[in-house]
Image (cartoon, rainbow, N blue to C red; front, side, top):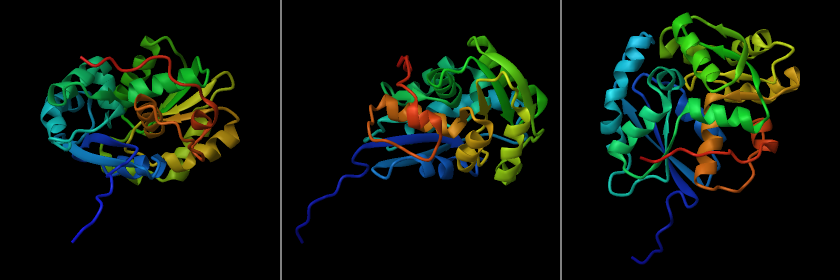
Length: 253
């Protein structure tokens, strides 16, 4: 039988390295990603509760997990899907560990992507909402402060496992975004790939009258810029509607 093979992900292949306990990031990312891109997922070992110690411990599994993303074919860009894990381990170390398993592959993570996204919408002063325990929440806030942002307020829901984070109703996330906002904040950042934040971005921006950046939204935006994807994406906030290209990209070791 004769046939013409069809391309798989004609505009690009996006690889996601997410946590073994993650319930949400694939859904959020696929909701935002264009149809001509394909998302391929692998998982790393981790354990609840979501503590600084457990987040640091899981990083050692990144090289192994990266090797399992379409071996022999590869992806155009690899995403690490854990904001808090990046905060406690460091963006550069995350990229280096992934490139041990996928040499030469472009890499992004939620902390780096969100930093670039916030700069792209012109934000210097930011309010931060997380689902985490206080010490993990503080790690995220410190990560942005270290990059030169002024953090005007930080709030967390006090959750310590991925199931409870994904079970957090989008309405509660929206209410949290409204509550954490301060009048002088240029933008609100909603941390964590495990929470269902993609669907509330537009409404949060309408009510707050300022940009709202979420972990998964920023990941898609940065990944698309890394592979130079040019088609417009609508419905997911100011970042996609009017933000310029990021000013820097991930260094590939």
